[in-house]
Amino acid sequence: MTNIICTIQSSMMWSRALVFILISLLGLASSKAAEDVANLRGSDEALARHEPVDDTIWWEQGRMLRPDTVCPYPDSTNLSPVRSGQYGSSTGDCFYMYWDPTKCNMKSKCPLYVYVDGTISGDFDDRDTVFMKEMAARGYVAVTADYDDASMGYIDGCQGFERKSQKIFDDSTVGSVLHQLCQDDNNAFGHRNDVPVDCNKGVAVNGYSQGSHVTALAGNFSPLVTAGLYWGNGNRGKLCAMKYPACSMCGSMDVPCMNSNQIELPKEKRRYINGDKDSYFGACENWFGRNNRNNVIDQLQAISGMTCPYSQNNCFSPNPNQAGYYVAIGETHDFMDVTPGSFFMNIYNPWGLPQTFDWLAEEAYIRQSEEKMRSYDASSTGMSFPTSAVTQPPTSAPTVKQSIWQRLKWW
Image (cartoon, rainbow, N blue to C red; front, side):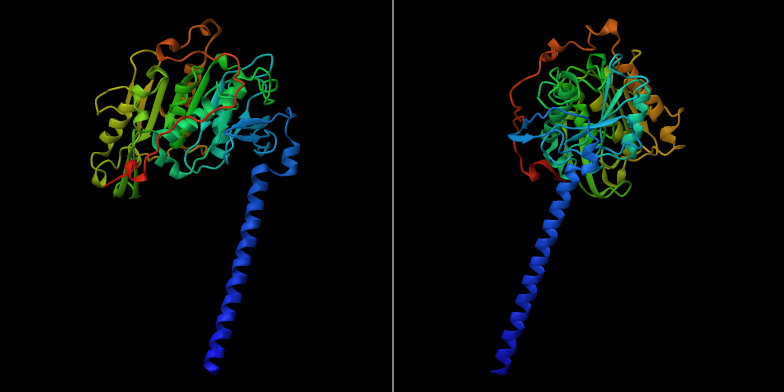
């Protein structure tokens, strides 16, 4: 009997302990949820620094949004003037704007530059700041567009990249980044009267890794896009437990929408840069990284549409545009080191930031004499030039679902 009573008392003690633990976990979850909401909306002090905007509510995928209460205002100590905006209902669907007021103002508007970062890169970091400042110095209104950049985004493959690209770059979709900055003539989103941008002067796009895949499709959704610079791109991705040179326990996924014949922006207006040790796109195509450089080049040729001997580290179009690809020798997937004095920031490095940003700024810019002569004929691609803003709520692009096992291949 005594043993039974002791067992019951012990069970009751454990039950109380479990209840206490559950209550504590619920309390922590509630606190974390409140913190997440607070971080998403931004502090009162940050919101107070917002520029005045219309009290407009718009629709995105069936949800009502207020542009002034979702995306936090960036720290103005590194970038000023700077603004923030929202283009979708998902966490992270924010964009940030910066320009040099000595070069861009409402009397002298500038072309647009849009950068999209890689997987799990954060909303806004020092590297984004450097890119925005560099393009602003070249006479552009610079934008960083954040998005749902979780690593599992690669599992959706082309359908996921297309969906994300459309949300940012489809200028005919109400609320997209390009719509707000290029087509919102009624100023429903509060930017058109304050951001000195003229998209008819050109739209340059730039992306890294997953963001490179998203920006590569930008021209498929808007004829305003005039040139693109892509870092860490490919048509066949590898996810390896042990990266180059071990290259073992790898899964692969084809990304056919990155092939040059699937990209609307002409190849004469595109430049790609990959490291020859890029485990994700080429270097780990074979076991233990065999023939890694040639495998990297194979992918670069497929996505750029340019073909040169394997002995060359670069391959450019024969015309003055100098579009094509670079193989960055000795570099991995992430080679954009913006630390002062790094090789990437060296003015003599042909694939570094100074020279490639000069190329992008020059190729994207449309001079007044060229405004009516776009760099490609939209009618031949089945696209039409943008007209007035669409008044209907946007609809998401149709997708065909496949299982993860259909998308991911292992060796």
